[in-house]
Length: 230
Length: 250
Image (cartoon, rainbow over the protein chains, first blue to last red):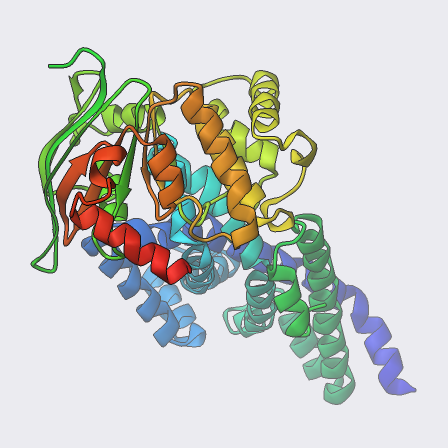
C-alpha cells in the first residue's frame, strides 16, 4: 500500500515530466523531419559530393552513442563559455541523431517509388524539384509513416537518457522521487507504464494518419498489416 | 528545310559504358505523320525515343521542334520543350497517389499554371476523349492495364503536344487489352496528331504508318513507306523481321 501511496504522490511531478519528455521528442522529431527529408532527397538525387556528405553525417550519428554525444555537446558549450539549458542540448543531440535515422527512412521510401514516375513527370515538363515535390515526396511520405512511427517510439525511449544532463523529464523526476522515498521498484514501474502509454497513444494516432492518407488499391497498407502494424 | 517538319532529330548518338547504344540516328516528322520504329528488342528504340526528349541525354546530335533548336543545357528551355512533346511509356508510369483525373490535371496546374477548376474540366474532357469519363475518380491501382495506358494518353493530350512519342504502348498489356489502346491511337492518327511510335504491332504499323524506320544495333538501317518495305519480294530486313514475328504469332 505504501508503494501505491508513493507513486500517487509522485504522479503529478512525473506527469509534468512527461510534458518535458514529449516536448523534447516533438522538437527532436520535427528537426529530424525538416532536415531528414532534404537530406534523403539529396542522397537520392544529389551529386556525388552531396551524397558523400550525407552518408558521412549518417555514419557519424549512427555510430556514436547518444550518451557520448550528450556529454560531448555539453562539454563543447561549456568550453565555449555558453551556459546552454540541458533541454536545448538534449533536443539538439536527439534531433541530429533522429535526422540521420529519418533521412534513411525517407531515402528508402523515395527509392521505392518507381523511377518511371519521376521520368513521366519530367516528360510532362516538370523540372526536377517540382517532380520531387509534387510526385515523389507525397508518395514517399505516405510510405514512411510506419518507419517514422518506429523512429518515434525509439526516440521516446532514447530520450530517457537525457536525465543525465538534468532535464526535468519523466526519468529525472522518477529518479528524484525514488532517491527520496527508496521505492525504486514501484516508481520505475510507474515510469515504464507512463512511457508505454505515451508510445501507444502516439502510435495509434500515426496509424490513424496512415489509414487517412492511404491510397485505394495501393499495396503499401497490405504489407504493413502483414508486419503486425494493423 | 521542310516547313511542315514538327520534329527533326539529327545525328543522335549515345554510349553507355563505352558501348554504342545509338549511332547517328536521325528522324524528321512532318505535321500529321505517324512514324513507326520497329526492330528487335535491344535495338535502341526506347533509348532513341527517350533521347529525343532528353530523359536519356544524348551524347551528340541536335533536336529541333518546329525549326527551333533545343538547347539541352538550358533547363527552362528543356522543360518547355518536354511540355510540348508528349511521351507515352511502355509501363504507363501513372502517379499512384493521384486519381485518373488528378493524373491528367497535375501538369496543367503545375506546368501550364492553369487554375484547379479549369484543369479539372480539361482533365475530364481528355478522359472522355479516351473513353474513361466514368473512371475519373479511380486510382491507378483500381484500373486495368489498358485503362491505365489510356489515362497516360489523356495526360499527354491535355498538354496540347505538338508531337507524341509512344514507347511500345501496348507491349505491357494483356492481349485482350491491346485493342482498346490501339483504337485510341488510331483515332489520334486519323485526327491528324503527329506521332512517333515504337511498336511490334505490325498490322497497325502497316495500316497507319506514314513511314517505318527499322532499327538494329542502335542504327536506323532501313526506312520507307510500309507498302515499299513490306512489299512481297522486297527482300528487306524489315520484311524479314515481320515474317518472323508472324511465324512466332502463328
